[in-house]
Length: 72
Image 1: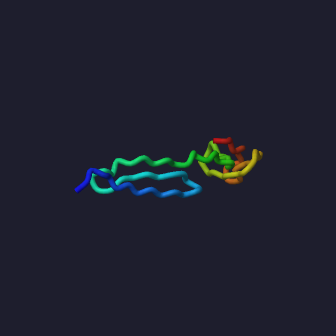
Image 2 (image 1 turned 30 degrees about the vertical axis):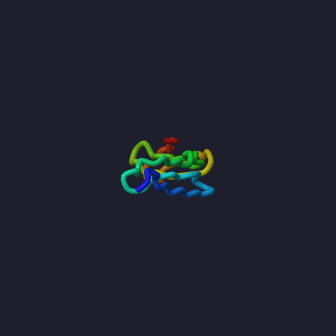
Image 3 (image 1 turned 90 degrees about the horizontal axis):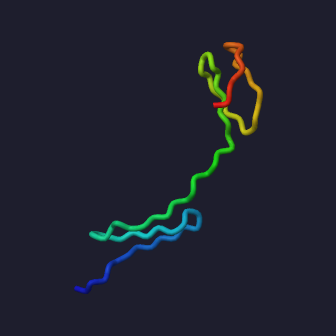
């Protein structure tokens, strides 16, 4: 038996490179993609808590409470 370690190398163009060992050598390195910034905004009614998502800044009101929703 030799002292070489078996390494599994997977390459994914989108997520980067993942290197892990097998058996007793499973403490590998994993590169994860950076978090994406959301373009969505959430607006909430201060009275009842109803919420709406929008992709741009909007001026919106809750028709149940007649209150202007605030960006959360």
